[in-house]
Length: 307
Length: 201
Image (tube, rainbow over all chains, first blue to last red; front, side):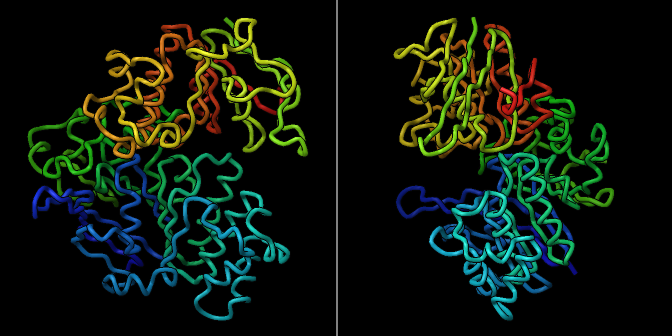
């Protein structure tokens, strides 16, 4: 059984359209995703593809005008708003984007103890500090007394000490130099290796591939492909969706090929393949319905032409 | 045409050690120079000095042998990592594009800026879309050097390749010089004629 299972998740935002009328702007369409214990699943895509919305939907922290359909389960049980509230910070933890989320006025040891929800708080905190090679003297320090790398370790230590089994990390590494980046990503691998499931949200394929087992690629509000990390190799022939291949071939270390065009704006064209306007293989079928998601070579793809 | 930092030293606080000490860097017209090195040792500060945002406490920045102009259109333009922090959130895109010069349709087309973005607010564009706006704004006819400080770090690979493809084409056509600051060695290898480590200048 998967730790987290997301099935057919769609989200739209209610917008007022004049006197007493509403319309719904679709932002996520029929999204599928699973995360198993012991696994790092990276969610990749351009800004605006809906990556953070997915994270917020799992945590149950979408704004109140969001309308959600589909099903999410955590360890086999349905994630209702009540259950999300109970699990948040307990079983499901968020590692935020920036170390600015630490409280500047509280010693970091105390902040991590606050996150501990089960067992002896001080023991759990010390254990997680040891795991991340943070000395005991660090407990009493304030965030401004830590280097950037240490502060990041404190954030991950808090997620570990909380006892959470599903960790959602939202863009934890952009702009870091390679050494700090490797260290930060290595922490997520370690969490998975001790049995957590990790959902790593990122726009940086190359770095995500260094730790992820599987990669979910988002485009215009849906997952267009779920691939294994090993599929990203050579000229990308093992990849299933043309957008995934375009991402891979756009890396400077590959072809640096600029695929022309833009993703559709959120809310546009939910009834066609969102990638069709940029796809060299697009046919009539692609313009008239959203391709169904199907299994292909131990992965998933949402493209009628993929083989 | 030559943009150069001559023996520049800079620190943000007199009680601290020098962040840059007697640093030297030369960029020729038409040349693309990469600048790399660990976080926090002065890459962005050097770019700010070269663009005239800050004055070095010692040494000087020279463009074609003269100090940077103190008024008018700046021939050395800087593009930053976070476009949403570099635009006025209360201006529509159309007005942002007029801030330094009147961005023409040809450049908009080269950078993939769609007509319908012009009436939107900055928070209605994605990061990649907004960064194109910032690049267009910096590429007036008077721009002789473009300094790109982690310009595409926040963007996905496809958008990154699109923007650099257009910028390099424009730079080549105008014989514009560029400084590219990045942690991505592959990106610098793709773009640059030479790569400089900040530790060695």
